[in-house]
Image 1 (cartoon, one colour):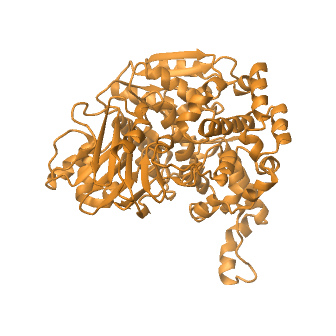
Image 2 (spheres, helix red, strand yellow):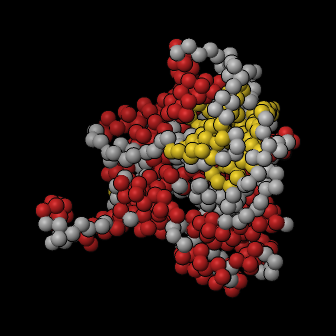
Image 3 (cartoon, one colour):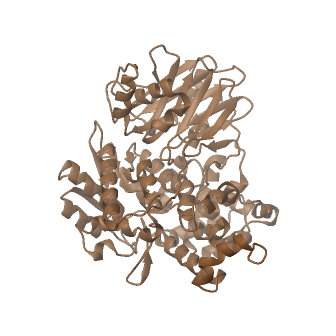
Amino acid sequence: MCGISGLISKNNNFIQEDLIKINKKLNHRGPDEDGYYFHKNLGIGHKRLSIIDLSTGKQPMHNDNKDLSITYNGELYNYKELRNSLIKKGLRFHTNSDTEVVLKAYEYYGNTCVNHFRGMFAFAIINKEKKELFIARDHIGIKPIVYYQDENSFAFASEIKALSSTPNFVKDIDYYAIDQYLTYQYIPAPRTIFNNVKKLLPGHFMVVGFDGLVKVNKKYWDISFKPITKSNKDWLRCLSQEIKESVKKHMVSDVEFGAFLSGGIDSTLIVKYMTELRGEGIKTYTIGFKDSKVDETPWATKVSKKYKTNHTSLLLEGNALDILPKLVKHYGEPFGDFSSVPTFYVSQIAAKDVKMVLSGDGADEAFAGYSHYPGWKEYKNTSEEYLYKNNFVKKWYPLANLIRPKKYPKINNPCSVLDNYLPWRQRMVNAKREKLWKSKYSYILNLPNELVYNYQESFAKNGEFSGSQYFDIKTFLPSCILTKVDIASMMSSLEVRTPLTDKRIYELAATIPPELLINKENGTWSGKHIFKKLLEPDFGDDFIYRKKQGFEIPLDKWLFEIENLKTIKERFNNPKSILNELFNNQFLNELLMEKKTYDVWLLLVLDEWFCQEFN
């Protein structure tokens, strides 16, 4: 995996060293080599972590007549097929790298090249003839790209922190984004903590002129849930075939690799197919924490024995306050998903052995695996019971509405309203945030909900249940889950590939009827039903149908241990702290004394970020 960057001077006062400073902030993403290309008032940079075509994949890369130049971060899993197709169309290749395939695909197809890609990517191409920069991000949002604009510059990079080296960078805080962070534990794209820095949305591309002005910001891909009918046997065959093919493509590498193995369903399935394709001895990595309420390492050991992997399992002490400054530094903005802590540690361990691992991220959104989905399903059922007197009325009401609309007006189902789903995704609820913000900032709470504005139409269009998956795929998955994995792993220069976030997998999953995803198991609603059945030949019900567990850490014990509690209390009561500028001190201390673990963690991360940015 790599880091990419670029800079356009709007006033033609381009200094090469300015781009070099931005690119150097990405050293951890590409320790193997770096490269630059400069053209008049702009330049692009690259930091390389070599995985494929180790000898000839140097970047930035140019086409034959040197009018196109690319800086690329990612892996294209259909690059061999696409390369052969382009050769038949008359294009010549000089390397075996997927970078050249992306470049030549743009040369032939132009902006629509992204429609031919299957993989994870973020890249930029200088087009001298058109005097523009083409920037694109992959379909699901596995690879990040952020950009900065002011009156003098346009800049882009793989991480927010790198952009802070842009000449005369202005740290203009977006306070609405802070409230979004407190609500969801992350800042949903396209916003960042800075008003003048934005995230390019997944499945989008941009066109920026050499004058630094954005000409196009366009969506090129979307997911649409349209269930089709098949037998369970056919679904299992299709899923097994598609997932195994995706795992195979994600294993293409010129360096040694392994897999994260938590012991959960998703990572187990990845290791199962890796073993079937590659044989025994796959390197797998698991960590646990002492004093944690949840320890999945025994489950991971069971999986390792089943598939005969070369397994590394460590039980760590860990301390959230010790790792906090390092995590905050790399995420570049407040990011409160505490599972970034174990993700960092397991990446650090794996990086000692390999340069790349596969992981099971992305299955919960595609196959409705999160624990809140059954609750939302139950809410949907009770909402329908409330709306209609009985099943007869429910069945014939739409026809009655068409015939006599005044007597039988259209009924808006609560489950088609995104506002009703958002509380299921909140980390800090509205009532707490109302008490938290000082009165002079309370206007933030009354601003229109940007997520509702952006996603209500698609939420309703995709169905009362599938709309919830759509929303999570567009927000939580790229801005939280995939961001967490990308940053935490790149801190150790480790590439993480996620076969279950392949666009083909998602497009297939979007055709599975909801009743095959959410089902009652032993009288209790449970998610990922058809997905779990893929493991039935290898494991018993006690393994497959146990209660879902996340990547847990003993956060409460770490935070509220006597010395740490004292440190946090000092931070919460520091009169110069941003916490006491924005929030009511009395309520801050209430949260601390009541040991509201997640709320305290969110506020600690926010405080640490401001301390680092503004000393």
